[in-house]
Amino acid sequence: MLLKISLSSMRKMMKDYIVLLVGLVISISIFYMFQTLAMNEEFVKANSMIKSIMLVFNVGAVLLAIITFFYIFYANSFLLSLRRKEYGMYMMLGAKKSKITKLMFIETIVIGLLALAIGIIVGVGISSIVGTSLMAQIDFPSDGYKIFYIPAVLVTLGFFIVLFVLTGIMNAVKLSRTTILDLLRAEQNKEKIRKSGFVTFVLAFFSIVLLAVGYYCMYYMETLREVGLIGGAITTTIGTYLFFMTFMPAWVNSLKRNEKLNSKGINAFTFAQLQFRANSLSKLLGTIAMLIALGVGAIAGGLAFQNNAALIANSMVIADMAIHDATAQDKALIGNMNVKEQHEYRYKLTDKGVYLLKEDLLNEPPLYRKIDRDNNGLMKKDVEPERLVVDLPAPLYINYIPREDAASNKEKLEELPKSWDNVISNELNIGYSVFGKRSIYVADHKHYAQVKGEDHKVFIAYVDDFVKYKDELKQIEERQKEVTKNFGNQPDEEEMSMNSKYGIYTGFYSLASGTMFMGFFLGIAFLAMMASCLMFKILSGANSDIQRYQMLRKIGVRKQLLTKSIYKELLAIFALPGLIGIAHVLIGMNIFSFILANPYYKIWIPVVIFILIYSVYYLITVQLYKGIVLPKERR
Image 1 (tube, rainbow, N blue to C red):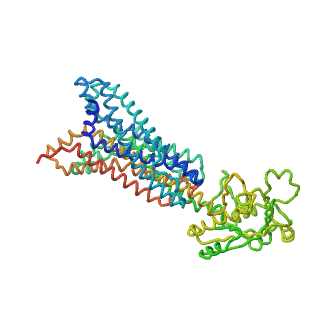
Image 2: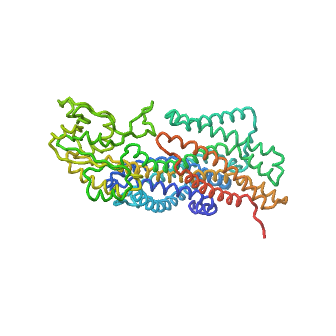
Image 3: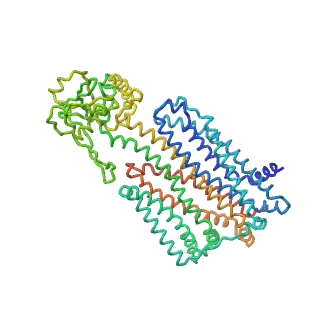
């Protein structure tokens, strides 16, 4: 019987449940997608580069879970507020509170199970698209990746079922503490209208100061570092809430006092409606503004991190390629590139060491970048590269001695200057990743000739744009792994990793691509749930507005004017947090300035996505609100 009543009630309130269902499906599908990308064990084992991306999606799943918890609780509270009078009537007719509680609990579980079924199906589709796109973007095989992954399904089901049960219990407790009279008179509660005064003025001024301090901290993040990050987050958050608690009512009151503006059309009614709900919406609008900043910022941050991969590789290594014993195929690929500068250096390889010829390095000095650090120990940006010009008077220098051999090494050799160290390890890619536990030496011509070892060459080149030649560099990199395996003395239990610019770029790019996808979908989930919360809040008070619209219609106000008033009223409510949220993003993205070369890379994309999602929810809210408050016309 209770199930029948529950299903009947849900059919009657289908429009409201569809709004909740859409938000839940978005959340569940993205959560499932995150879990699928993070938990595919065979896929992760087969592709070691993917491990760092898995961590990114696990973090995204945790963040999404936290936001979803509050969203579901708020959404269910909204539905409870719409049903309070109905529940009160049931209790007046003799229904027990325990039965009403069970009825509400059944509705929560039914809508939750329906959302789970649809969400997992949609999530499988998203997982297929995202997984394929991600693997194509980082140029990695997707063998072993399963779009329908049972462990991910179980985690999604377990998490959301627990979540629905908890919200059902919390709503039941809330209902049990409400009297029948309060349920019946739920729509008669009026919001207090806050009037401007000295306290409001002080708080408004304080909010501006806090926002200014927060923006200052974020704008000068590169100088303030950790202090700016913490200070900016705290002051901006507090300032945002104070802004809406003080300026929202004050702004509406000022509109109401403007006689010229107030006398046009039915603006007096529109401003009165805004004034009536300004106080109740102030805290929610502050939350909406912060969620907009988080959602748009997550998408913008993902795009900026992906763009930063090439910039990081360029800052760490100047030479676009360092090829040991270049083959004919390598030289053919190099011939297809626009090479601006190239050099070749000889070295000999023994069981214990690598000996570079000093004269080659001095005759054709490569570029290197000084490691210039600031007071916080971080490397400064925009350090210009220099030529290697330091001469070495001694016949033999050493760059590296294995730790276990350092104590017993009897050779009293000069240590290489830092500039030579940078060139050998970074630009020539001569170090542990290629040569294992060998000492690295630089010898003059006479000493070099006495070394009994295999003769080799390393070729370095600088091109116009190394990202343009990713396909060619990938082929060279694969051959380099085979060539350097023959050098021997490699770590047995550790996969050899190339320290070339392309190797560094692909490593950062794969991580950044995961961050971009995570930020994109996390941002969309934030924006969708945030807009739903604002919609729920507006619609929850719609029933109390019906009488006012009916009275205006009865005294002759045209329906078109009432519709226009609704559009203007809701536009003001939606626009204000949207503008503040976007302002937070435009200033706040600067917090990444000390780790990203261009934190505003394609910032227009997340802004456009936000405007589209926000506009859709605004139009849906207007239509639903109109359907509730405007009287039905008789033909």
